[in-house]
Image (cartoon, rainbow, N blue to C red; front, side, top):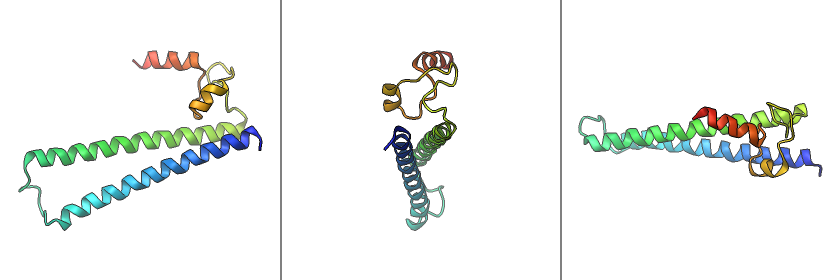
Length: 124
């Protein structure tokens, strides 16, 4: 099996894992919404403020997790496209080799270590 095949398999496994996580969160969210109605809570008026705040916090947390999963899925799709285009493993800024160790740790990396550090400093 060549390196491209191994890389593709690893990226596709990661995509499947992320899609499974996303589906699981969606099921949980549906159950939470249905659970409120099943529990006889027809209105939030009789709920304590702390309960409402906890519910809002949990929903916001789920949305944040979904956003991270979606970003990770987009990174995997981008990595697969770069693999198809023959650009996988090369820095998008300078074109240098990203390095096998970095790609082993983060298969969706698009920047060499130097440019990744610059991007992180600029984001702060």
